[in-house]
Image 1 (cartoon, rainbow, N blue to C red):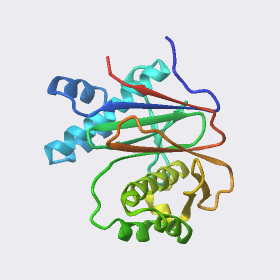
Image 2 (cartoon, helix red, strand yellow):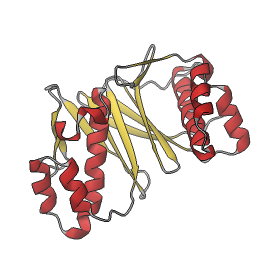
Image 3 (cartoon, one colour):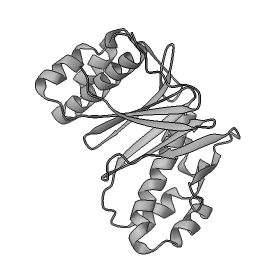
Length: 229
């Protein structure tokens, strides 16, 4: 069976809709393992339960297609902060927002964050909370109409970076610093790791912002829409 595993220097980004009907939801539930089903059962709010089943089931179906395996046969391990990994690779990370889930794949550690663009009542306040001093000065220089989107984007940069490093948000938003004035922006600092990290963005939907951080140089980013068979 053909595999779709990314080569060195490549990132594959897949996206799919979480808006599945009852029949599709039952099929996705059937590929979850015992632990995932227990997690779903603990979610008492129906929307949250459906969302979890859809996101986890789609993740399994996608990784199975990439590997040429069966979704129910995939085995995951988890880092000290809970970051999932797939035994036998490839490296992956997932994020969901609104009705969309994305899965980023690479041959090296990777993190992805997806955010729906929502109105901010006070973008400057959020900027002060998440930005380093250098980043805030760069944000301050922007016209007011550009600030909201830039703050949203900075959040995706930082969350993707911390997910790539395996800490998630407990790693500290101020422990990630981005040069926002560069074209394209790049990571100045990610925790105490001095190895090279690549920062990528891909906007496949005007209502969403998606950022990816991966260790090492990246030459190609491929976008794919995933529709489970």
